[in-house]
Image (cartoon, rainbow, N blue to C red; front, side):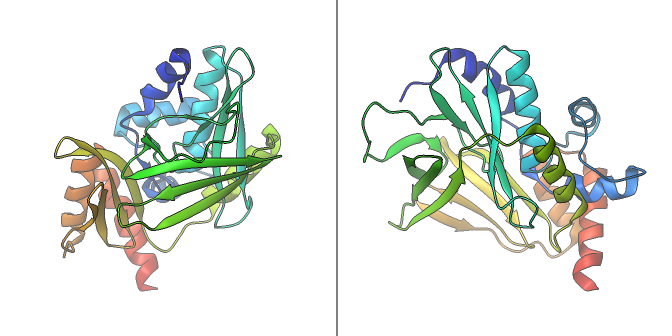
Length: 252
């Protein structure tokens, strides 16, 4: 399950990038016409405020950097143009072998898809607090996740390349449709091991090798902001402004 070093070198630039929808809310107040940001603007916002974005932001940014590094890559996804849409990236090595790169779901590493023979084994080190295996049939990719409690879940992708115009159109749709609650996910080190921290609908928890560890609710918006800033490094004023937007939506 080796991954080319040139691919990992680009992937590692995103190691401390959370997936978050705070940026989406913030942009409603700071962009004349809210839409998918160009990569240059995403990089500017990251440098100024520490923000990153949702799965579309991260996929487009990763595609840009992979292509700049001379690595062929394209976007894949599921249920585009809906509120449940998700996108990721497939990168190709020099022999044309494919690797799934999913920053939106906070993977630890790209995972090879083109095994010489079907692989039924579970693999560690690709996803925080879960073992992974993949099944590819034509263009349909199933990713199975084995959690510490023995529960198995799966995601399904269409691995056919998304046309660039369609990808940007779907990204625009996503940025213009705001959920009623904030969501932040990031990879963290907890007790020396990789874990997944998530804040979702005003609840937060760690996914760890020992199972889910719930955090006590934060009573005030400022407490939530402190928790998010500590985990992500996003500037506090951005976090608080975004949370107030979601708090207002939640109370409507």
